[in-house]
Image 1 (tube, rainbow, N blue to C red):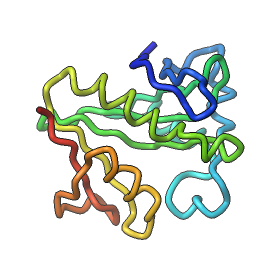
Image 2: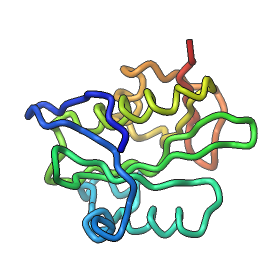
Image 3: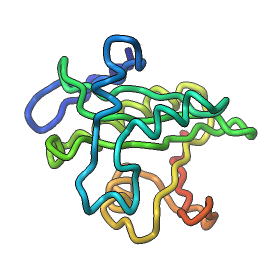
Image 4: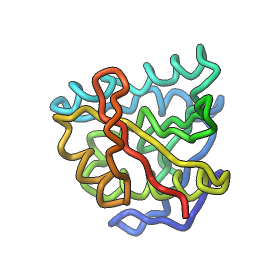
Length: 155
C-alpha cells in the first residue's frame, strides 16, 4: 500500500494499492463522467488490460478509506524518469479532491527514486492542465502522441 497521509474533502484517507484478486472487478468498473471520455478510457478495464500486456505500466487501485474510487498507472521510461498515466476517478466520486490526493500520493512515492516525474494530457483537457499545474507540473514543450508532456522537477 502507498500511503502519504492524503485525505479527500470528505476526510477519507486516500491510498494506492495493488490491483489483486480481491479488487480487480471494482477497479475495472471505474468509469469517468461522459464528458471526460474524450480524454480517458470509458472504463478503467482498458488500463488494466494495458498493464497486463505491457512491460512499462503498472496499475494501482485508488482507495478512499476502504472503497475503490479510481485507478492510476505508473511506469519507468528508458531514461529513468517516472510516469503517471491512466488516472480515472469514478464519476460518482469526482469533485471531492480524490484526483489531487491520488497525484500527491503517487508523486511522493515516485519521487523517492530521485528521477523526474512526467505525465501527459490532451491540450483540450483544461481540468487536467489546471490540476497538474497546481501540483507543480510544468509543460516541457514535448508531445507524446497528441498529448502535452508535463514534468514535476525533483528537488
